[in-house]
Image 1 (cartoon, rainbow, N blue to C red):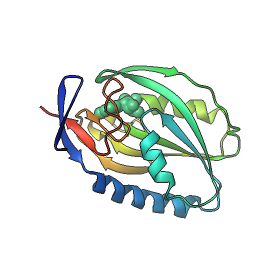
Image 2: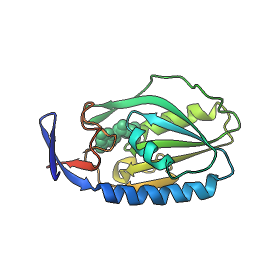
Image 3: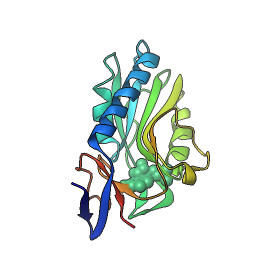
Image 4: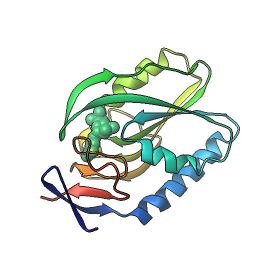
Length: 178
Ligand code: 5GP
């Protein structure tokens, strides 16, 4: 579909299923090379990263464990800047090589709150993989080690990303139509 309507707003196709799939394979290959013998713990940030993580981990065919955390700093179409921890750590982090899986890094507030909290649990290493980043908004606040796509600061939905909980189910990424 070229356009979809979600919550009364029109979104147009922005990154296709094929483009996403190709990039996910590339990211999987890079992460596999680095973590093949490290038995990493992938921490998937819910809800948005669930689709990306599911596809990405099909391309990491080495020992690993997966954990899920629900963080939310977004309401509607703008970041509230306030981090809400809605879940607790359910894995032993100490000494582990962690890969945090994020859907999109926008202002960086979510990760700049989450990563220091993670560090207090003494992991061996922490890196971040994000499907999308908006560098114009981020202004270097958070380092993304493995990145799918840089995008301009427009609101996107689909492939796990929502607009007030709608639209996560679309297989491609749509951008708000101006
Ligand atoms: P940050 O804390 O970096 O500003 O925002 C990170 C979180 O905000 C992401 O994990 C995602 O849930 C949400 N977010 C940021 N930009 C967008 C966007 O363009 N579309 C959607 N659907 N969510 C976004």
